[in-house]
Image 1 (spheres, one colour):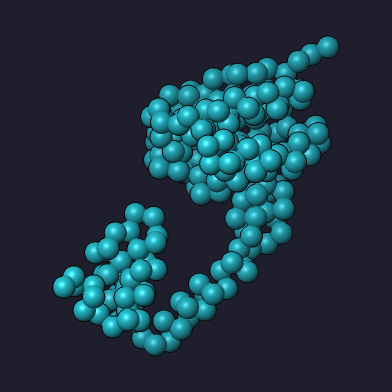
Image 2: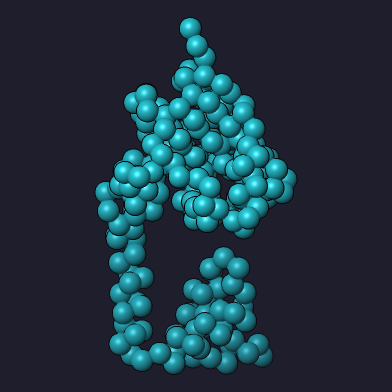
Length: 208
């Protein structure tokens, strides 16, 4: 009989939930559930209440789509940020990777995914309306495309270059450093710093 089947039903359910987390296997989920079981009752209650309220407390930033508990995320509220540079990422989870480089002080825009026709994700699934609104404001002069280097990420970057064509902005794409076919979320800060510093221009602003 598998070891997991020897546990009480409630504990097995807890293990199943932990195993749904990215990168958590059966043994790790088992250890997590058993560790939580050792917590004081009050700590377990607080953890449960936090998980229960998390979807209500965390939501996308009204301006950029980053995760926040306020109307605007800390980057959009920060007046010291470089407000003419915009870095476009697929998911909010990729922002800490770029921030960790210490070499970008502009603003962010979260697409909420990337193009994947086979999975039914087209342009309508991306956060493009707010992006257009921000660009039409006229304050943005450079846009950095920090999508992943896999097929879907490259397709999304190519699509964005076309979308940005009507706007008078310089468009650059992160370059070497991020392995081909990899997800930006899993890059370390040093690798991302190289990718940002080596970004290539894919569109320059049109001048009359």
